[in-house]
Image: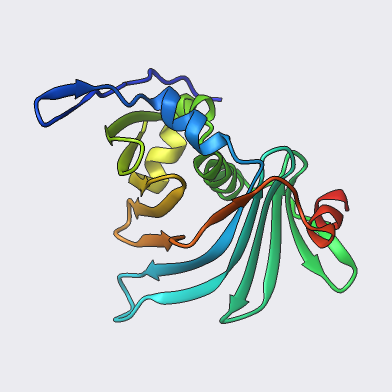
Length: 197
C-alpha cells in the first residue's frame, strides 16, 4: 500500500486546549462490537439536475466486516470483509472480482466506518477538528491512484460516523448520511449467517 504521514490537529475550545487526536477518534469508532442503522446516499452527477438517491441499512461488525443492504431504488445486498467484496444473488453470496480503484474505494469505506486510522494513514493526509461529540476529519489523498479519483473526503460525526462526503476529481460528489446509528454487543442470527457464507 501507499505510505502516508499522519497529521494530528489539536483543538482549542474556549481558551482551553483540549486534545482530541486521531488515535482517540479511532478508539471511539472502533469500540462498539456492532454498529447498525439506516443510510441515505446521494450521488451528485454534473450531467444530472437532481442527485441519484439510494437508501438502505448497514451493519458494521468489528470482527466480521460490513453488510450494505440497499432497499431503494433497487434491492441489493453487499458484504465487505477480509475476503473482499461479495454481492448476494439467488445462489447466495458471490465474491466479486477485485478491480483496482473500485475495490480500493470499498476498503477505504470500510476503514472509515470502522475508524481504522492506520489504514487511512497509508493513503491520506488526515486533519481532525472538534471533540469526541462533534468532530470533522478531512482526508486529502496522497497516493497517485486516489488522487485520480478524489480531491478530498470529509467525514463528520459524534459517537459514530454520521456523514461522509466524497469530492471526485471530475466534479461529481457523493454524500452519505447515517444519522440514526445504534450499537450492540452481538450480531443477529441472520447477520452471523451472512458473514459466515
